[in-house]
Image (cartoon, rainbow, N blue to C red; front, side, top):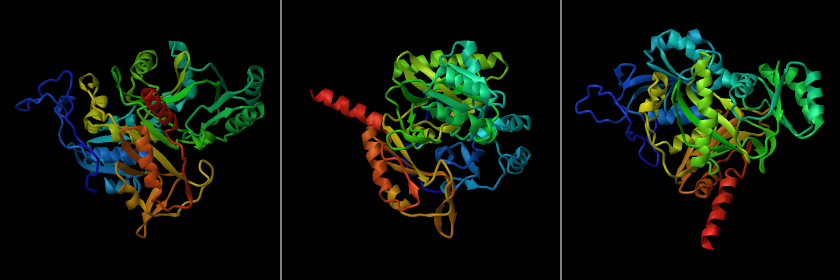
Length: 475
């Protein structure tokens, strides 16, 4: 385990709105002393599933919790190994995960990535009597099928782009010719954030249709959604849900395109910052009222109550917020900036979501800004090489306010090696987005990895707003 280096208090007991006295004397009226499923919370063995930057951020935060007696991660990475015990457990083998939980007395499983959620790992764990954080397989359809989500929006009046679903190429191409471009072509299923093509021309749209319906987006092929191109500013909105109640988390904005200036192919995300200025209190209230809460009611009505983190990818248009897509887990790299800003203990919040007691929870956030820059292997999101050596990480981490989260890394022969497409997240806190941005890029300047690349403009929208506000005040 590494020593704690977080810039402020990791655990701050969080006031709650209502509590049943758990028997502790005297009753403090603060978390983590809440009655979860009839039992006072005690230190526990926690298993975290995943291996990316998101899981490193979650591991670092959970490792600081008084409730984490033992933290295990499967399979983990070189960075997570400094926060938790890493085990080579096949996450896709649900029976193996359950057997491991029983052998090691795991009390609580936190599922990081979307694939095991959509495959029903939470259902299988809960059926085996093991508490798990995340949605059921039926509820995870909100990410597992874009067509399912679009149909739900249409049925319940949730604002989103106009769309049509297709299983064959020719009808899809006819639809494109009739409606014109630009438009968006999406693979229906999971595609690691890369099954989306914003087609500016008819040729691009038809190529995307052929690729996706022909299996070009891996298992996400077979059905596509074609939707109108929305004008506006993208933002990420997160809510913690327990089936009935949802509480908003901090806002964020990510950068999907691979290259500076929001150019190049879509990726899983090349950087993010929080808070997102465009999601002010009024806009956040609209997102909750018009998008998140109607979705929770709809899922509950169909017998698939949503528990876990609901991540709404939004377009803020002149008409208001519109849903671009749902994800059923913390975003990556948005999770990294959220965890930097979260002052409250994460573990009780995850348990409250699972136990259905979110109305008793109130989270506290740092007023500072957080920003992260993704360093990826050259070639990403296409083919890339593995095994290159990364140096200078200690010097980078020594920059004020900086935290480095590992994504695709492994430790070998005393070196840190690149082992994926997105490899590192260089994150920083600052009083402003500009300050956090400057610290992150200063840290990157210390990292020696010629086989990698990164965007140089993460946070540019927020920095422009801050500059404009400063000039306005000066006059």
